[in-house]
Amino acid sequence: MQLKLDITPDLVAMMAAEIKAGERAVSTATREAGNSLKSAWRAQITGAGLGQRLANTIRSERFPKSRPSLSAAAVVWSKAPVIIGAHDTGPLIRSKDGFWLAIPTPAAGRGLRGGKITPGEWERRAGLRLRFVYRPAGPSLLVAEGRLNARGRAVASRSRTGRGVTTVPIFLLVPQVKLRKRLDLARDAERAQDALPGAIVATWVSSRVV
Image 1 (cartoon, rainbow, N blue to C red):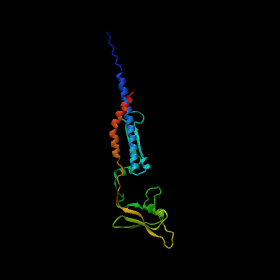
Image 2: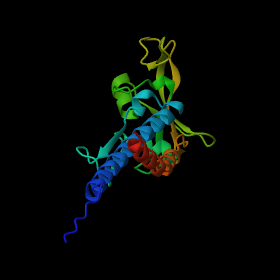
Image 3: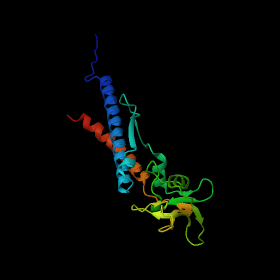
Image 4: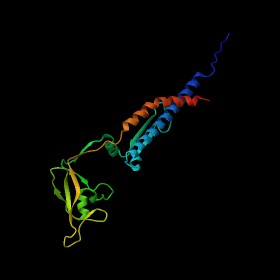
């Protein structure tokens, strides 16, 4: 007598198919969580008035890239981590030399690259010398003897008689600045992390529904 055991369906094939479905579910849900977090961070940045350009520095990537995996992971990061980190933590900023922080007034204009101008750069561009004015109450000043042009920028006076020349505050000098916290990136990251297990299960189950 011979007994033949035939198991239908094939359990090994079923387990292999289930593992593949799990790999796809984990990878898909992880990628979507990363993209969702990227969008949330970008929305926070633009909502805080920091501009679309800074928001676009937020990127996301899923690993491994080439195949589904039960160990898939998503990484969300910024290509401008120092700027983003400063607005996320609200740090206390001091001069690295231990002296003053020079904050340009509107009369100083902008730097060559569109950023904040420094006292040294301003003197080279304006052809004027800055003078220190100490004030016991309120920030001290760096001022220049010149005139304001039509755009409200301080420039050298062309008058030989001194007509129109005035003392113009160019920089405010403060020992330190407390940057206001404008972002809460951890909040969105925690929400994405908490939602991920449910998203994996939902994606896994939906793939089995005929």
